[in-house]
Length: 197
Image (cartoon, rainbow, N blue to C red; front, side, top):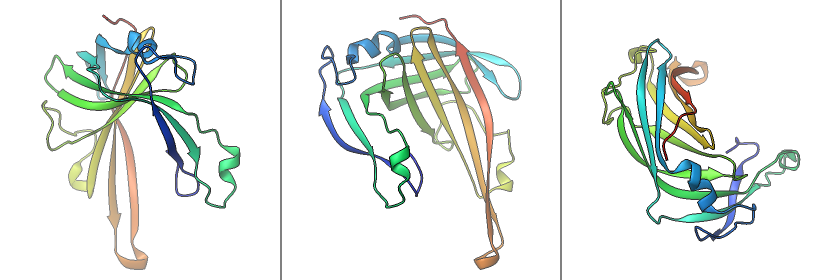
């Protein structure tokens, strides 16, 4: 988290049992109550159209940590003005599959929760090794040096929501006259409160 001027870094952690109340005032089981299980959602494509999405979260005894985050002191003074919350981090398995076959993925992710009333995960997509059939059409990959994408998901008592976002990077020229550029593009979102635990 952060940038070159101020970076939020883990400075310590402690193992938390599933039924143990973490320093934040909630337990891993509190988080898993709404995050774990099968969530039946609708994925809406930015280009138009929808497809059913099945999002499943399972925890099979992987690491559960309460992690202490602090802003690294780089001498700029910026870290004194920025909040850097500690959080519970749960290692979990996520499957992400759409009815139209565009995605049929499985990942090990870190479920992060700072307040106990929601959890989130971030997963970079390997666009060259997807289990589904999705291909980038939102931009022309031939116009860029590299194209990446990621999934951000969140869970709370109402279900789950999230988005799939891409970034295309390119450059023009070389040496001192060279210019690098990047373009973000939306791929799809889901935001349906129906879930099935």
